[in-house]
Image 1 (tube, rainbow, N blue to C red):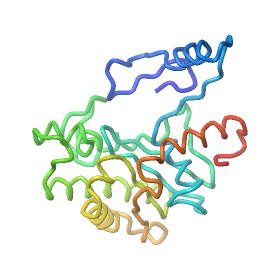
Image 2: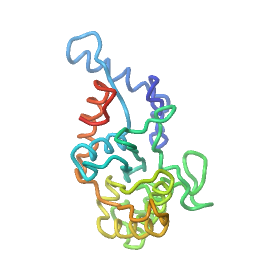
Image 3: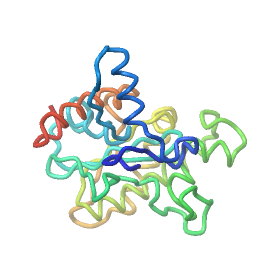
Image 4: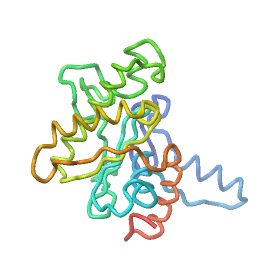
Length: 228
C-alpha cells in the first residue's frame, strides 16, 4: 500500500488496485462538511491495532512488541522503542508474507507458503470449503501454530517479548488458537533474549483498530509520539 502517495493497493482487495483512497475520502468529507478540503491520514488496521494496544490495551507500558491482525488477511504493526515502525515505503509489518510453509499454498503476492496464504480467514475458507468460523479444532490449532511460527521468528529478529493478536480468526478461535500459537512461539524463540515471548489476545478486542485510528490521528498531529 502506497501510504505516502495517494493510492492504496491491498493484495486481498483486488478491486482496490491503485485506488485513490485519500483523494476519495477527502472529497467526500469536504462535501459533507461544506469545506474545500479535509486532511486525511491513512494506514492499515494492523498498525492502528499496534498503537491502540500500546495506548490502552495488552501492550500498555511495553516499548517493544508486535501487534497482529489475523482476519480475512494477516498483517502486523511493530513498535520498537515506543515508536511505530514505518519502513522505507510505509509498509513495515507485512508479516502475512513471511514464509511459514515452504512450498505451501500459492499467495496473491506470487510466493508460496506465506502466512496469509495459510492462516488467513480467506485461505482457510478456500482450503476447507467452509467459512473460517466453522473450522475444525485441527484447523484452529494449525492456524495458531503457523502464527506462532512467524511470531517466534520475528521475536528472534527484533528482540521482542510480546505479540498481541487480534482479528476475527484469532479472537474467534480463542484459547485453542492462542495455546497453539504460544507453544510454537516457545519452540522457535529459543535465544536467551527471545525466550519467553508471550502471545496474548488483543486487550481491546474487535474495537482495537478503531481506537487505533484515533491514535494514528494523534500521531499525525504530533509526529514525535507514537501514542497519545
